[in-house]
Each structure stands twice: as C-alpha cells, then as structure tokens.
Amino acid sequence: MWQRRLIAAAAVVFCLLCTTCNGYEHPTIPEVAVNFTIYPNSVDYLDLNYYGGYVYLTGGVAGIIVYRLDYSTFFAYDRACPHDWQDREAWIKVEESGLTLIDEHCGSRFNILDGSVVNGPSKYPLKAYRTRYDGMILKVYN
Image (cartoon, rainbow, N blue to C red; front, side):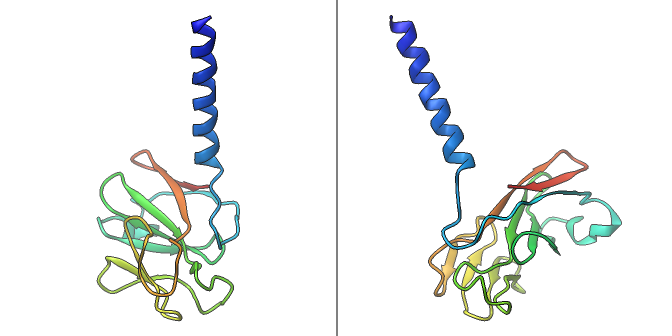
C-alpha cells in the first residue's frame, strides 16, 4: 500500500516539475518558436569567441541577443522590451559597459546575466531562451 502511495507521489512531483518548466509564458511578450544552432567558435561569430562577447541574431519576436559568460555558459534574450514590445523602436541592445541591456526608447535596463529589471518602467524581465553548448555547437531554443 505504501509503495503505491510513494509511486503516486513521485508521479505527481514529476508532472509538476515538467509542467512548470515547460509551461512558462512571458507576461507580455508572445510565444514564438525558436530553435536554431550556431558554432560560437567559428569566424562567423567572432564576438562569441571570447568571454563577455555577444551577437545580435534574427529570430524570436524582435531578434535575439546571445551573450557568452564563460567557456560553456551562454544566455539568449529576445530583443523585444517587455514594457513596449510592439514598438519597433523599442529593441534591447547591450550597453557599452557590457553588464546591462537597455531599451533606449523607454529607458528600461536589464541585468545581462539573468534578464531581470535593473531600473526603468518595465515591470517584467526579458524573455529568455534556453541554450545548450556541447563545446562546438550552441543550440538556442524554447
């Protein structure tokens, strides 16, 4: 009897974990399919060849920023600002310091390491995409 309860509890926990990870929807930015691969160490992506480097790519709602933190850690964010994502002038870019991202149109700033709001009118973080790096290929997906 206790074994059935244990199996049932484990199944419930597993289902909760699966639905909370895959079921996240950004509060303002619409869901758009993203699934592509790049080779960060190639000459096509020279700015990703070093730590702290970044590139602007097509995809997502308004384009995607890919940022390299260290050898194996990459972050990918949609360039659409959560505050005014429908405005074509409200695209996120990396600030000169390389530590924050900004929408110069509304003034919102975001942390480059997690997409959280640093300041500005935006109440929501950037829309982040998942990344997986195997030492050669970087996959960006949702």
